[in-house]
Amino acid sequence: MATTTPEPPRAKVWEMFNRIAPRYDLLNRLLSFRLDVTWRKRMAAHLPPGADLLVLDLATGTGDQLLALEQGCSRLRHGIGMDMAEGMLDIGRVKIHERELGAKLEMRTGDATMIPLPDGTFDAVTMSFGIRNVVDVSQALREIHRVLKPGGRGLILEFSLPRNPIIRTGHLFYLRRVLPAVGALISGDGYAYRYLNQTIETFPYGEAFCTLMKDAGFAAAVPHPQTFGVATIYQGDKAP
Image 1: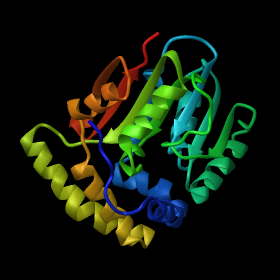
Image 2: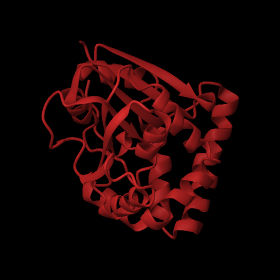
Image 3: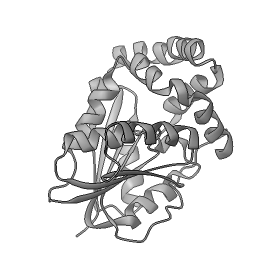
């Protein structure tokens, strides 16, 4: 089972994130009511066991997830953040420098569907709010599986839709009406937050996404819903 993300073209997505990069962190805090901070911290709790972990964070953006992993897991030896939006990476590099973490964390340009790193490199690969934006989701999942060590773990944090019909109705109203309006007002880019809403509503979630992970080679895939299911942490384990 394969899935591809519809329009806009990949280059347009990169351009969009470069445009909103200066206010991206602020909007994340406001539009998620700071829940994104909590969810990123919980990702660290799902890292695999073992010492001296080597972690790759795809679609790293401004580095929030990478920094949350460093803060939340003392076992992390080295982390690499990878993204195609240079404007976002530049902000992430400043954050790393300000925290004097340059020896432990680094930012690189790279595509999740063609990760420019060898097979079996990482103990864990993480990706937060980025899998919706790749052109070929199944290819990105295969690449994550490829660069993981045997027994490694893929962790993907993504927006999803609540199962409860009452909560779902309220959440859809927020996605369709509130989020695009507030996002456009603060970022000056109405398109970016209409795109966010559309991709959240159409992207596979729950067991459907776990099936994609298993099809990509993961031996097991488990969803961990967050905050009534408005987001989900997907855990995929590679066979030892």
